[in-house]
Length: 188
Image 1 (cartoon, one colour):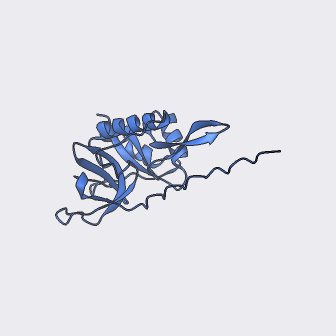
Image 2 (image 1 turned 180 degrees about the horizontal axis):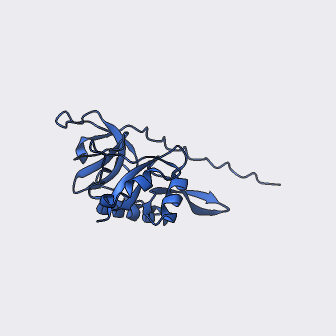
Image 3 (image 1 turned 90 degrees about the vertical axis):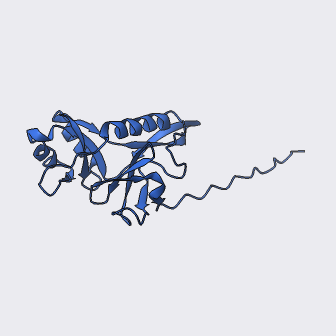
């Protein structure tokens, strides 16, 4: 059965790893985010990585494909459980579809949002709930579905918690000051 797994890429080698896995026949998803920049009098989408250094690969773990993934150029690690089996990314289909929907909306200039308006997918967050056994963990927000957030911890392990238990640790950008137009000089 095909399932999604989180893969950790070597520094700045996400694209290399994804290309290598794709060439080997794996389904790969590298989450991108799109910002709009003015290029030659037009606003164009500019891509950047959403969840550095993480990306997703879909494969059949019982067939032993994890070793192939792990040994691909550009791959640093495929997180495994204590038994040495690759960790399945729970709710992978749903979360990856959510990421793709948001990515498409950003590409076309829409402003997609998830449950909480102060959080964005791919943002660094801290689990801030004394009731959760993983309290104090840091990670990357992968998705939110029906109030349950999925975080990829810094060690590649997936953590699920209530979306209200998250706290953003990325500083919010300061709004840019508006440019004041200078009055035109009148020629006499």
